[in-house]
Image (cartoon, rainbow over all chains, first blue to last red; front, top):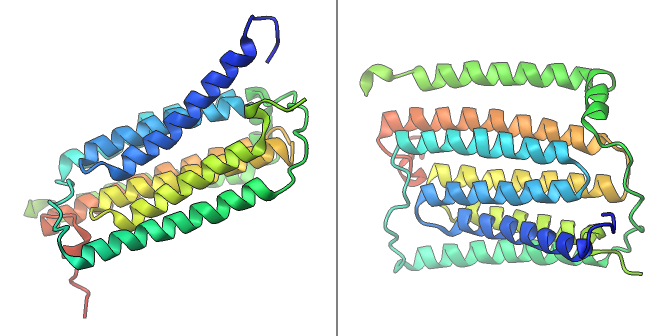
Length: 178
Length: 107
């Protein structure tokens, strides 16, 4: 961040904190809300925060793609799925001992994962950040996609084609019964 | 001089770890297929953020991480399309997408 604009450091830190808060908060909403449509909105919030984080990681192109693909495609298609079925969580029989035990187990497992990975990532002596790579631009990505990564590029287009056809075939079957 | 908060790899890695933990929690706790799908997407996002952070700070090649995350996003989109078509097919046959009721193969 250049120092030409007054308070630019504070502004950048504030926006970064906002992006982190939106990411984690959106993920929490996505997982904890009992209404599925709200958790889709939480996923969209989380994607928005992630786009901000990608921007701070020197990749405006990926920030754009995160918004276009996750909010524009994934969340919208999940909303369509919500409209075509009745996905709300059933009113929880939380009094069951089984349910409480299961929730405790989920909390324990995720807390253990969080604790372990956070400790690992805080412990490591990370190298001083390299100077920001000069060229993370769209031009460089395009060159890499068409030279070094041309085979994976073609393969993923094939995967997407097969996924579209497969989704059509699967969702079409049994249509008469409805 | 201390680097700014957004220039420290640990911050990104901690955020990714929290996303992973939240996703695993949702995957275990949710009782509908779409809820589990959303939790899976969170885990995908955690992996992407990790790749991008390590590419930026440890292996500063300008494009490798971005291209990898781009492929990951494409795969996630394909996976969501397939999973939702399966969910719709299941709903059509069972009138429900609660995993507890999909027990035809249970012995």
